[in-house]
Amino acid sequence: MGEKTGPNPTDRAKSGVKRSLLTDGQGVPLGVVAEGANRNDFKMARETLESVAVERPEPTAEEPQHLCMDKGYDYEEIRELAQEFGYTTHLRERGEETQATKREVGKKARRWVVERTHSWMNRYRAILIRWEKKPANYLGLLHLACALITFHCLALPG
Image (cartoon, rainbow, N blue to C red):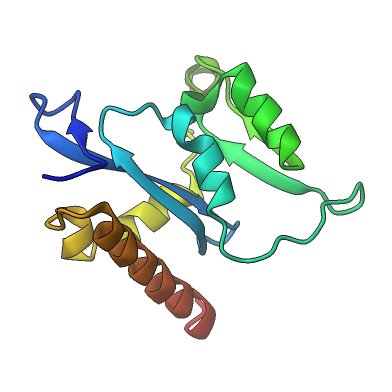
């Protein structure tokens, strides 16, 4: 299949790709990277934070920049990385979300804005099923999809 693919642990070890995406609070993509499907999410965190295409404003005490992550990122390395980049971390610890939903009857688990953006990206067939052998071509398609999603979010609000 090409570089930056790896055996998918959930699909009989077929070759696959995993993408890591950073969005703003509205779901507008800010940065994206791709690796093999066998790569842990937390190992892609530094690359994802470094892939932000726009210049970030400097975080201040009055206006901190928040970084919300799910329990797959519950590692001390990630907390240190977020601090290095100047983010205020909001991280569910393993088991915490399950306990919170059990206490509040009828309340579903928190859904992340980034999951919605991944869904928007899956509407592009070349992203959903990776046909590109070269990682640079696939990353180019990811950037094109991010640009289209950004355009739709900014030009067509609501």
